[in-house]
Length: 200
Image (cartoon, rainbow, N blue to C red):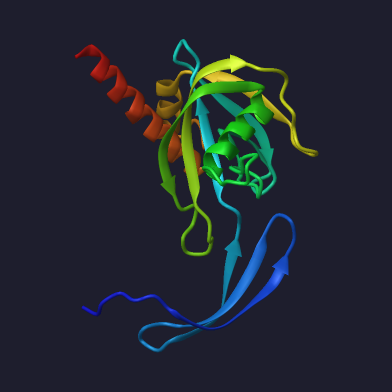
């Protein structure tokens, strides 16, 4: 079996760019000498997901129109990491993904959290996307004000039992973005582990 090796890129150009996405078109050669050209890569900023947990154990979810599917979809607080996320007043750079999670939680729900737990980092689609998504658990919630939605954004909030949502996902009664599903299972595992440790 041949050792896996990255492709070589012989040429690269930006074929489309706006404030949401950049399409990079690469001319590639595999380790076996096969030319693949062009190969289009979607250059997105990194993303975050947040699972806010209420004191009674329910999770705060969103319902939002998603134009790719043309459907109202159940999901998590989510968004992109922006250039100013993680920058302090002294010009130092902190954790941009954490700052984005804090910002998106406040903007989409009006809640703030005293504790953020990093659950996992994953790739939305490593075949054609360049970015990563980091999922967070938000604990110690308190209402800080009203949500502040972006233009064109309208989000419904609902509180749900995590075990019930996972059961609905397994039965097919609910369909969500795969990144959100992975985050919910990671949250369930973390919360179960914490509960088990608390009983010892």
